[in-house]
Length: 429
Image: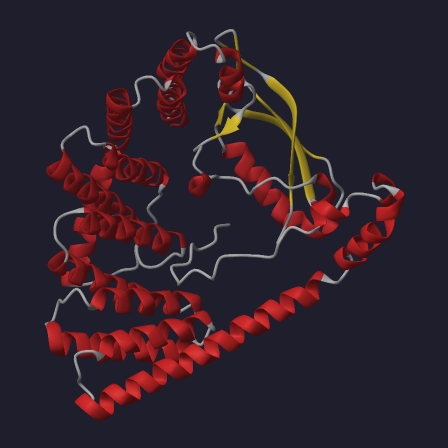
């Protein structure tokens, strides 16, 4: 299924030099008097990479340990000089917590993040900006340890702080986008009522877009990220199926009923909403990227995909034709047209919403299936090619999902065509 995009502090970047490229040369490529040098190089390149990695890891560990000791010493000095509630203590606690977090010592890090946040509230006020990195760090450690309920609670508190502490500019836009993405992650994790998560995802992206427009105008290209987020929310809203709720009583029941009514309105407007969002994306791109015909064509393809996924083939093919026309004047029109329409594409065409697992190298595959896609993008003639009895249930699930998946069909000369004998291979984790 899906994997959670972790919100923790990213690991240190970097790596080892690419020695292997030099090792591909043979001794005969050198003059005779340099053969011994080449053999030394080959011998050096044959050293176990694991040893180098272990040495690097050891150096990083020693550095982290030294930093930890320095941070703890700084904290002790501040406490002895200015007391346990000193103003400068939060920053040192943040540095130490991040250091422990980088060592996967999340329980210790969480305690420090929370203490730093508490001190920031005491010294700077209930909704001070100094809390933001501390709360973000705490959330990252909760996610890393799989405590998504606490992460969700702290994420909600973080947004309240951001809404009060941040100016109405780019930082607030970024905060709203991040919270919209959190709602998406919570939806994929099955936390709470899924439909309320999707409405919140859409609403926060819309607030982010409104924030950009208020600051920069209706054609600002900075509204593109929230527009794409809103579009993905529409795909999820349109496809979400409500289940019979657990009986509730009193105020909770009334709130639940209101949420369901509201979601039904969202779902009823999703098709028109999706069209409007893609048209808004196209308008912004026309304003700023008018000469980038491929970019414009891709947006028209996106419009066709949305329409086809919703079962409106006629309007979808009209959008696909407009995309081809957009590319027609380009010198490389044939190449880009083949890229967009040369083979069937599963919809939605967003990596985060892909209905199917990623295909793998056939040598690594546990399950292999063949199928066709007709001119309307519907899957036909599914057949399993492998004989692996260990994955019967998973194979049935994949074939069921494949059967329900709508594809953008292959096009030639502007016409949709059937495609036969497609093969996809999957590895079961």
